[in-house]
Amino acid sequence: MRYTLKYMSNNGKYKITVESCILLILLIITSCIYTAKLSQSSDDINADIGKDSIVQEENKKQDSTKKNALFNEADYKAEGFGKYTIVIDAGHGGRDEGASSNNGRFKEKNCNLAIVKKLKKMLDQTDINVIYTRLYDRYVTKKRRVTIANGKKAALFVSIHCNASDNIHSKAFGIETLYAKRKGDSRYMTNRRFSCILLGSVSKSTSNKARKIIRREDLFVLRHTSMPAVIVETGYMSSRKDMNYISSAKGQYEIADGVYRGILSSLKEIDRRKRKA
Image (cartoon, rainbow, N blue to C red; front, side):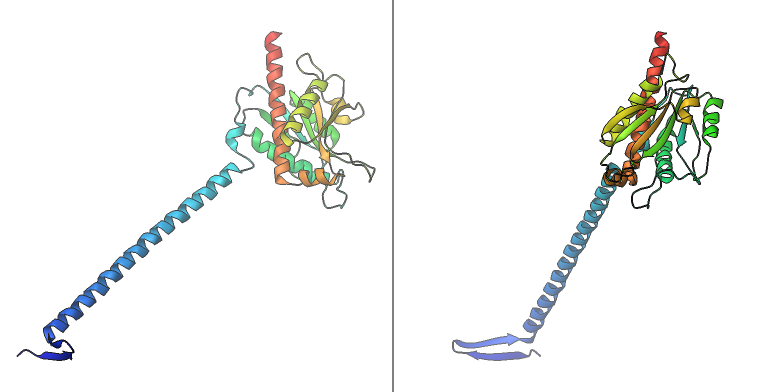
């Protein structure tokens, strides 16, 4: 039996069968299902694109971190210096605190050690035999520092310090190197020459003012070491600008970089002069 629905319009009569209604409903349902699947597929594609964007963004961040890293081992690889022993001295330590920042927050002994630890990371990438007078906060006498250097027959001695002005109104800032003219001089490298090399190298790496090299015969570690020896005054703790720089990781790495490059330049110069001798 076929059921029909009748609808009267102004233009005449239209007959609609039940089968037609069912078919229409099925078409509508099919169309809705298809539309829903298309929408879901689009969402999946967008989700994948979103995931790809996140991955790309993370990769960019990682690349940026690598580019902005303060220390990269590959930058400090150096060989051909295995015949040399050098001594690196972090000035002061323990009960001997050295100078202080104007606000008393920073002690020289800690700043010196922080720089030396970063310098160690750089020198560890070379084949240089490096001796450190201290790698933690402990008191080491000046005589002991000299004994270590002389006992190891080191080629070079570098002592890391921070400067300070006694005048609270002083505007002094920048880098200085100290040396003594005595038996440590040799025909391959004088103390003054070594001092000049380190001053220029640290100033270049830090973009800080190279003040001057100063002859100091009264300083124990300079007077009694039997190899070219220099004290590097890395900046003024009495200067707010210098102090902010010295106490920052960026500043410490850049200072260490300058010392590292100055040491390598000095050893290369010693090699050249030995070959010509």
